[in-house]
Every structure is written in C-alpha cells, then in structure tokens.
Image 1 (spheres, one colour):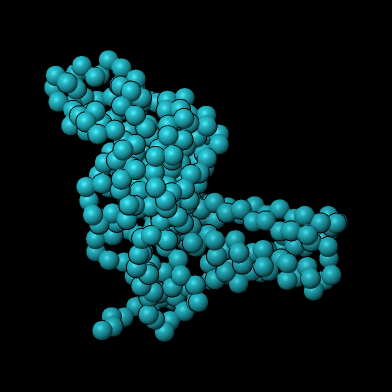
Image 2 (image 1 turned 90 degrees about the vertical axis):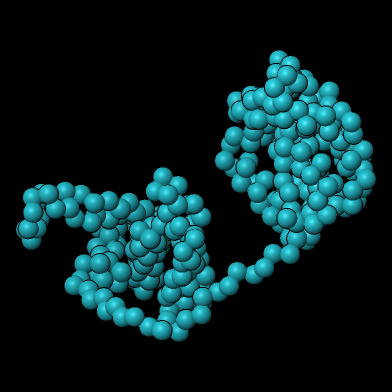
Length: 303
C-alpha cells in the first residue's frame, strides 16, 4: 500500500501503521485524537474490558468500533506526536472545528508535531462521523486530489473500439462497467440495493438521460428557429414498469409496459399557445421516436 487513511481512532492507527510500513508514502487522518488521554476519554468504561479481554467494542458518535489492547499499548509506549514527528511521509489532517467527540485542538497538536510535507483542511460544519453525505464526499475529493501528488495512480485503460458506443466489464467487478460513448468515457453501475457499487448511473438511467437530453435539445432548437424567448428547458424523467391494463397488444393480463414519465419545465416569456406547441415538439425528439418505433438489434460474436 502507498496511501493510508484513518478516521477518529483509525487516524491514530493509520499513523502508527505508516511508521512501520515503508511502502506508504501518504497518510490522511480525519477527526483524529493526538494523545492517549484523549483516547481514554473516548473509551470511557470500555478501557477495563479492553485490558481484561484484549479488545472491546466502543461506541463513538453512534457507531461501534473494535479497539484492541495492542493499540492502547502503542499509544502509551510511544506518543502519537513523537511517531508523526519522526516519519517522513506526506500528512494530510482534516478536522472539524465543531467536532464534539475529538476537539480541534487535537489537529493542531498533530500538525505542530509533524514534519513537512503536511497540510491541514478545516471541515467547517461537519460532525465527528461526517454523517452528512456532502461532507464525506468533500473529504473524499480533497484526499483524492491531495494524494495524486504523492501516489502513482495508473491511468484507467480506455476501451478500444471503432464503434460509437462500447461497454467492457471484467468478471470480478460485479456491475461496474467501463463505457465509451463517442469521444467520452463513463462508468455504469447498479445501486448498492441491487448488488452494485453505485459508482455510476444504471443502464436505465443512461437510457432515461438520453431521452431527457434529446428532449431539451429538440425544444431549444425549435424555439431558436422560431425566435421564441426560452431561457431554459428542464426535463425530468422517471422510468417504471407499469401493469399494461389497457394495452391492446398484450398477450397476458399480467404483462407490464415500460413507462417513461416526462415532466418539462419551460422558463421564458412564452404564451400559452407557444408552451403547448413546445410540449408537442417534445414528442418529435429523435430518441422519443426511436423508443416508440419498431427497433431491431442485430447481435453477433467477434474475436
């Protein structure tokens, strides 16, 4: 490993691990304590159980963590500030001034003890566990950008294809799929509830996005040609499979029909007649027509 990241007590563990693992080049700690006394304060009644059993589950800010006696011994025998002051690794300290579990003073002590290269980022407004999604995403983006200076990240292999669109999925990647869409590259995935990693949109979200994009492009193109004042067009799409109760061509009563529910918002100085016409134009979008037309998919194996 070349990068190690630790949160709370895990930050202290990350620093100790980095001191022992030569390959680690960069360390990032998030809302981490700087001294054993702070750790003992966090452990409260669990310290006795750790000493007796060798480990114990500790609740910090609403989440359970397993702490081993070896970790406490390391902190007692060699202060964290001494460890961080001796190793020659890049260090990033992220800490919230509003952290009520581990105070911001801890970050200051770690920063002062550390050698350069060292950096500090204030996580203003975040709680100890980064329970807000926007806070955790921000931390991830900051660490990724910072680590790129110290960690060699191999470039993602792009799909080689003469086709406009191509998809590639390795057997050990579950649903995480690399896509080539024209001159652009994306990731497709499935949500975690479906067994995916949620690293990208699902196939049906890509399909819905194609309809939404085509809809707003078609409306704006028509409005420009007519010289109508359309400041913005927004299209919202929801996809579902509905029971086709009134479907004339359904062979079974239980058959379902694919349904794209499209909601369009038009902003601009438009009359009701113009708005009605633009809503009609939405159905002229090429992707809309493709979805309604009889399509053909030709599949063959290649070497």
